[in-house]
Image (cartoon, rainbow, N blue to C red):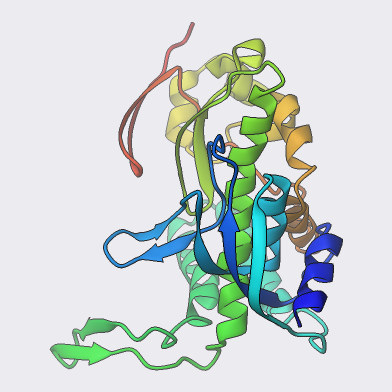
Length: 288
């Protein structure tokens, strides 16, 4: 299996995803700014050290090798007989419904379809690591069991693929900085990055907005959704760099299957930001 996963890692280009993962020992170069492999710590959860031992998916190992990491395979597993896309049709249905709710400005249905779509992915991991909760109807604690779609392999590939995608964003900026740019990562979590753009390509807040909002920033801020231009138009330098990373190409291809033409989008833009913690930011907007 080790030879098979080595080949799968080498062949991974984002056109498809082979279900496979390995128990590995790794070591990044000492000057690596953002190591991309995660190790579980009993106190802090997932951390990204320069060296250690962990179980990683094919996209994560592929990215680590790009960063110059030395990988020693202890044990590996590759699924060779899995065909098709298990959740694609169901997810497209939910996404289409949510997009229509956005068009209708129906926030209740928008939130409902978002919750159901996100829950489907989370349900693949339910019960694998049992957690305690509180049941309001029974007014007592309970331990979560398996769901109808719990599947450890799928859960591993979902979380590992997204970790590789998020890490690819950070590594892309690191690589651009070695070429004379000065991107600065402020925070990164789950599926997004807050960063300062390069001074060589530093768009003003107006430049990020769609043209229809240029004359009224307050109207844009109140609208909240789809007020920004496409990411590729606002920051073409970083966008083209992202297409070098197989994990992000895979994400782009997945979005295409749902008739979505964007795999990365601008959620917010500010002239200055005060970073309190990973999920705590205060942004300042200026019309100039």
